[in-house]
Image 1 (cartoon, rainbow, N blue to C red):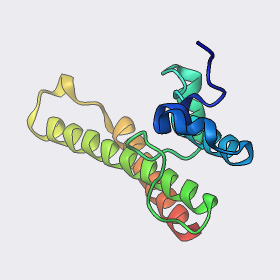
Image 2 (cartoon, rainbow, N blue to C red):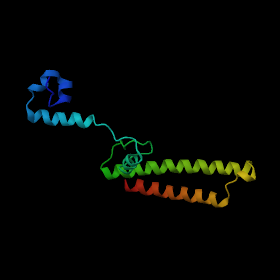
Image 3 (cartoon, rainbow, N blue to C red):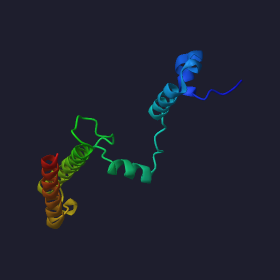
Image 4 (cartoon, one colour):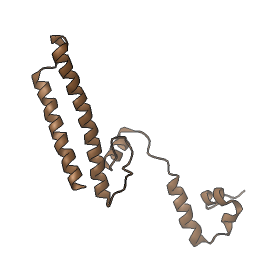
Length: 134
């Protein structure tokens, strides 16, 4: 049995794929192949590359409507920074509860608390800048 030059078209159209003119079959096959690409393996370098390409806080590419790729990247960065801000605020809140109600040995100390506050301020400012840029 001969191998089809257009396996995706053949899988979709059956024997009718062989009757398509090459100038139509090639771009259709390429579109099917692109839609069925296997994603990069879940490795640290591949994950970092996807993050730099504009993933949101959920680890997925930014899918909301944007007017340009740059706007999508700015919104994805703001989304990630906002998620980080929420996490830092949760840590700060827990640290404050421990300071007020917990044992003295469990307190993280004033310098660490101030560091968390500064990180929150910095992320909040960054989110604002990214949203203005978008």
